[in-house]
Length: 280
Image (cartoon, rainbow, N blue to C red; front, top):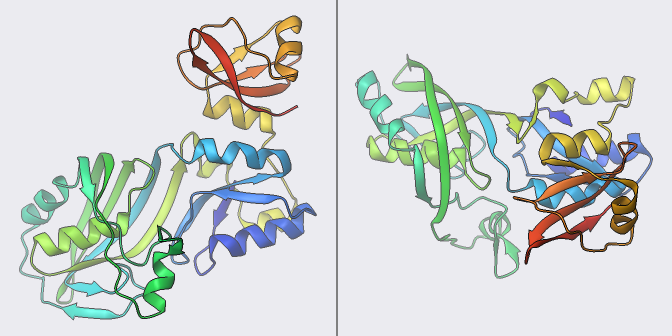
């Protein structure tokens, strides 16, 4: 787990960790924009196969929304499209607008996103001068807390913390709240504080990793992210060759040998447990 600094792409972080780990087999779960900081989950070698199953987890963020300025990217890195005085906004109106962003939403992602349109990233199409219109997608914001509302000259800055589904664009929340209030809005800061069960407490800065390269063992990562099932040796041998198990599971689960070795991810199917990915 890396605590990504601002000013670097997620790919930049992967490249740095490849050098530190001495392997090219490094991947990440969930892109963070260059401006954003915080938890970036990386997998090394066989742990990269866990990453696809972690993409669907909840995420937590702290962010600052600036009301009164709309940008081309819905964050501070884009061109200013419009600037509108917002100091007249009542705090109650700001809080009410943000309250509409909680629950099951149909959200239009920002045009400058990593979503593919006909095989090409949306942000690349924008850079190439194309007009990009993305379809609204269902997302869920489980909770959103406003911790501060303050006037900054003619604008209003709002500090928020939220817990949301994967695929939620916090930039889009800033854009939509600004539009609803008639003044425009964008993000000036974004920090991801957790991806699923992994939070800042288990994340290391790049400087810390340079000084002492530390990883979370794959068994510990799997136990944190999935229900754990302890097997006897006979069942463990079946798992090692990918056999089905006569085992009742409620959901995708991590299965372990008697000595604690992480063996595989199994899912319930047709009354049995079937292998999704075997790691031994």
